[in-house]
Amino acid sequence: MYSVSGYGDMLADRPRMRAYSRALRKAVRKGAVVVDIGTGTGIMALLACRYGARRVYAIEPDSAIEVARQAARDNGCADRIVFLQDLSTRIELPEPADVVVSDLRGVLPLFQHNLPAIADARRRFLKPGGALIPLRDTLWAAVVETPRLYRTLTAPWTANSFHLDFGAALRVVTNSICKVQARPSELLTAPLTVATLDYTTIEESSVRAQIEAVAQRAGTAHGLAVWFDAVLAPGIEFSNAPGSAKMVYGQMFFPFPEPVEVAAGDRFTVTLQADLVGEDYVWRWETCVHDGGSTGPPRTRFEQSTFWSVPLSLADLEKREAGYVPALNPQGEIESFILSQMDGKTPQEEIARRAQARFPGEFPRWEDALTRAGEIARKFSR
Image 1 (tube, rainbow, N blue to C red):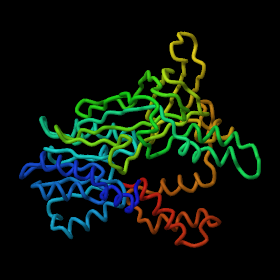
Image 2 (spheres, rainbow, N blue to C red):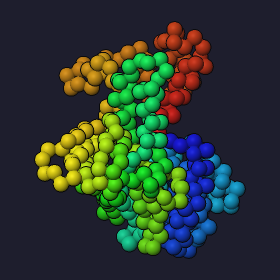
Image 3 (cartoon, rainbow, N blue to C red):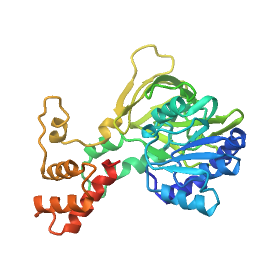
C-alpha cells in the first residue's frame, strides 16, 4: 500500500497524469459508468466525473480511500461516486461499466495482483465494447554499465571500513531488484522487447522470455535495466525508458553477482521469468555471456532469483515443507481464539473481554485486548 505522500508523487507525475487525463477524456461520455480500480486518493474518479460520468465506482482496499471520500465532497462529486473499500476481485457491482481505469503498477506492471485484477475487471465489470485503460504495456530490457548504481548496492558489503567478510549479505543484495533512474549512456546493448501485456485479452499472470543482446561497445556489464512503454488508449502513450521524462515508476535494476568485462560484439543470452507467488512476484534471471563470434559454451553464466533475496533460516524452510506438522504458537492461539468469537452476533467489546479473561498475561488491560480484536476485525471481518 502507498502512503498519502506516495499518492502525491503520482499526482505530481505530469507525463503520467496528462496521459491518463487524456485517455479518460477520450473514453468517458456523458452519462457513462466508470470503474476506478485502486482509486487511492481519488484522482481518476474525480477526473471521470469532470468528463461527464454519471456514476463512478471507486475501489480501494487501503484507508487512503477516506481522503478520496473527502475530496469527492470538496469537489462536488460525492453524489456520483460510490466508494468501495475492498479488493476489486471481491466486489460485485450493480451495473456494467463503460470504462474501467486502473494504474496498479509498481516500478513495473508485474506488481502484486495487478494482472489478475485487470483480467477479472475486464470479465466481470466491463460492457462488451467498453474502454479499458490502459490497453497494454510492453516490457523492455537492456544490459547496462552503471558503476554508480552497482556501487550503491554492493559497496556496504565489499568495502566496509572494518575489513569484515560480508559475502553472505552480498549474495542477498545481488539477488534483489530495485528501482533506479538509468541513463541512456549507460546502456551497453540496444533495448529489446521482453513481453507485451495486452490487457484486452490477458489471463496469464506469469511472464517468461529470452532475449539475445549484443554489446554495442566495450565496457563493464553490471546488470539489466527493465522498463515499460504504456498505451492507455489509441494514440495516448507514455514511456519510462532511460532518457524519457522522469516518472514515478523509474526502471527496475536486476544486478549481476559481479561485474563482467565485455568487448564490442560480445553476446548476452538472458532468460527472464516472473511468477506470481502469494502476494507478489518472484523473479528469476539467468544470464550467459559469450565472446563475440564464439559458438562454444558461455564464458560467464549466472543464475539469480529474488527468492534468494530473502534470508530464510532452517526453521523457516522446514515450516514450508509439505510434511511439516504445524501447531499454533502463543500469538497464533490468541488470534485463533479471537477469530472464533467473531460469529456475526457478538459485539467487539464482549470479544475483547473474553480474550482478556482467556489470556490475562497478554492483555493486562481490557483496552489492549480491544486493540488486538480491532486489528483482527479490520483484516478479516466483512
